[in-house]
Length: 60
Image (cartoon, rainbow, N blue to C red; front, side, top):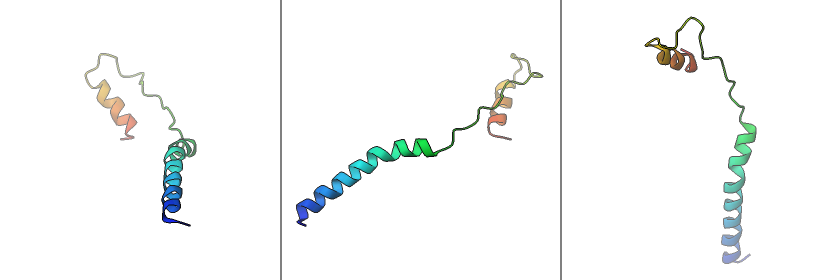
């Protein structure tokens, strides 16, 4: 195998992996579950509502 053919083969392998890897990663990665972030005991105009929701998202 000549040097040119090796470079050509290596380039095609890299391009193929760069194209396929992101799609494969999305299929293999689990989708996050969407938990309820609205609390019935927190009013919509409560000053700390956004902080409470952020803490809930971070599981704090």
